[in-house]
Amino acid sequence: MNKLSESEIKTRLKDVEGWEYEDNAIHTSFEFENFKDAFSAMSRIAFEAEALNHHPDWSNVYNVVNISLSTHDAGGVTENDFQLAKAIDGIVEEE
Image (cartoon, rainbow, N blue to C red; front, side):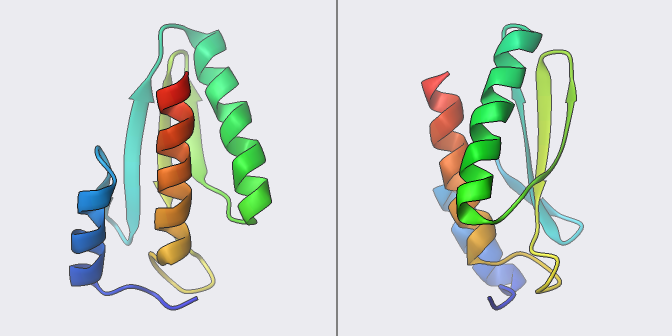
């Protein structure tokens, strides 16, 4: 998988609402009603990430989930990151 250029990343960000590019990765945060809902979303995202064999860097504090995506093998953001970002958005919308 090839690393995307900064201009390619900025163009692709228009397709994923709420994601930003910084420090060689794309980032977003989601706030849920409570911890249970946040953890439920994380569990669903984990199954999707495993299916795609592409895993997020993330953290969770109570009802907030922070997610960063970057393809370590490519040294930056790739198509895989945007594919997972779209899948994550779909999962969170269903919650």
